Amino acid sequence: MRPSSQTSHHLFLMATQVAHGFLERLRAENRRPVTPFSAAVAFLLPPLSLLPTLFLLLRGPQTRFWRIALFPLPVLAALHAGWGYRIGVPWQVGFEQVFPIYGFFSLSKAVEWTLLPSAPTQTGDPSIPRPPLLLDLLNNMRGIGLSFGPPLRAAQAPTRTQFVRRALLEVAAIYLLGDVLDTLAKTTPGVGTPTGGSIYDSHPPWLPPRLQWLASTALVFVMGAMIYASVNFGYLANSILAVGLLGQHPALWPPLFRSPWAADSLADFWGRRWHALFRRSWVVLGGVPGAFLLGVPGVVLGTFLASGVLHDLGIRAMDPSRPPPLSVLAFFVIQALGVIAERALGKGRVRGWCGRVWMWAWLLGWGHVPVEVWFQRGMAGTWVGTEPFSPVRLALVWSGWWTGDPADLYTRRA
Image 1 (cartoon, helix red, strand yellow):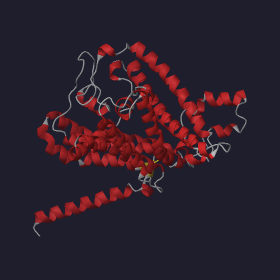
Image 2 (tube, rainbow, N blue to C red; image 1 turned 180 degrees about the horizontal axis):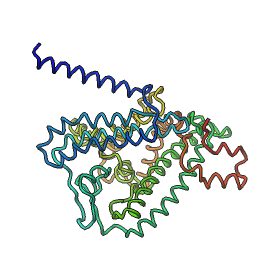
Image 3 (cartoon, rainbow, N blue to C red; image 1 turned 30 degrees about the horizontal axis):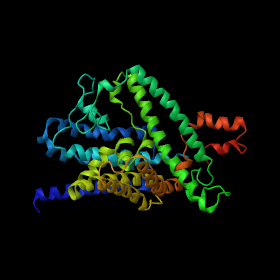
Image 4 (cartoon, rainbow, N blue to C red; image 1 turned 90 degrees about the horizontal axis):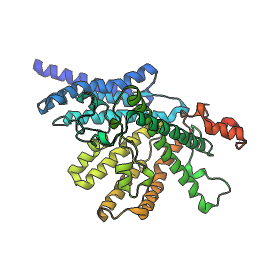
């Protein structure tokens, strides 16, 4: 064997051993308990590892070779952030999902910025102060004011004072909504503990068997509303800091949700009214390959399939010993099929009250599948931030409406 061949062979063996050792560390039983320091490192590594790729992307399409050469760095950082740590505390089981979701998002950015022929551009009203394009790409999850996202319009934006005042009122309202929903979940028999339980066993004993599906459907609605409240609360809190303290323009923070309860079709719900924080990631990892294989229906199917993979990974992190069934992925595929069916009927055919009934029946009916898996893994029993300052729980105890042990209103940390 020639020296050059020997060197290549040794380098290949070293790379294989390093990769094998790294992947072994990502196994569920080998993940390290997270600390504040390791969490900060894990969440900072992906954007830092992407900086060289972004610098090259901004220099033009001739840098793709070097971006591909750097591709393993952000991939390893994304795997480390998503699957290198665990919380390991039963009453915080719901937060285990944060790591793989962040890892999935970081991985999608590595793929996108490595393969893009040229960098996205900033669009919209030039009078709006903007961060440099590199920082905009790092922080702008929805692509607001970028060539692949919705444009910026200063004329439609409120003043900073109006924005902050309205956001504070919305934060207070969503806090109360989240408190109501969390209290309902914690006090529902069979599901309100970190050990979890089935939504089909949560009905009151006096409810007739023919109406017991109402109890499980109510929990599906509660779960969806909890997702809406928690995601929207975090977004609004960040927007208040950014606009109120950092002086950013309100147009940079358009509403995250657009009254999803008012949707009159599945396409309206998922495409316009539900949050789009990860839509770009799903399009990159699922929609683009789907378009290549099946055209327009493939975009829809691939995007929803990528969304299903993200949620599947989050559920796996909650309880690695019990991988979620394929029905979780099937829920998102079924949503795609519903959207494709609406499109096949023709634009504007599914709308109004009939469309609204159809949309809610499809969502709540098939929504039993992922919510059952979430609740069995203790999602409803996860501690949330409203508990230390819970006006709903205090009102129940002080008014005498809650006659049981007040401790049952709170997360059980045993």
